[in-house]
Length: 280
Image (cartoon, rainbow, N blue to C red):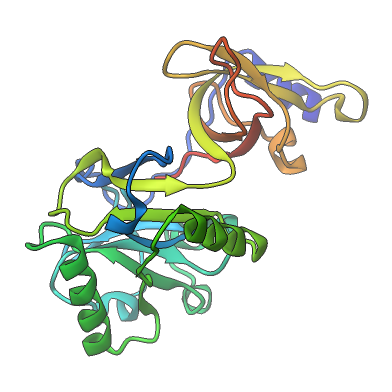
């Protein structure tokens, strides 16, 4: 049975997944560049990078970064401020797959949503510097008094050595890394050095262009994904796949996220490992 299913996938058959929420144009949002150590870190506010699902509140509806509506329970959004918010739907460190499954259900599981927190890190379109907006976030969260609405704590560090100490502490506790947001920056959108991510591992995206059958204990299942980066580089991605993903591989054409340590001289990722199918 598994062999026949894998064969169908290898032949290029795609399975359509049910849509979640309502389609809409992707909103313009701020996206992070990778921290390279070439900036004055004392000018940035630092926070933990959460492994949650990014969610944007426009004052009426909660949406994924793709623009699709999130089917949250009515009680979850009822008390949110009318002001637009940008943040992460989060349960805890290392719980991405669980929170992703909860918030992407067509019919919300009320009990499961009780575990979800909305962690705010930005106020889209708001005036002032990021430091001023961070203070406004603190005030909005305090006024809302919702048990599931939180600000993401922002703090200054004096130098790179202290920044490294904070990174080590977060990673040791099971976190992903840190975010650095230029304190004096006005609200901007697009990919920018205004926002930087710092992690011991980097991540990137690639398109699945082929499915390689497994060998040995993976016979009859997926052995590795053949993927292509936006720059056109191709490589095999076999590490990091779960047993379920080997039985039911991502369809050809799917965009996946992988993690890697650094790049070879030819631009290929070293120690690449599958992380997840790209979310909404």
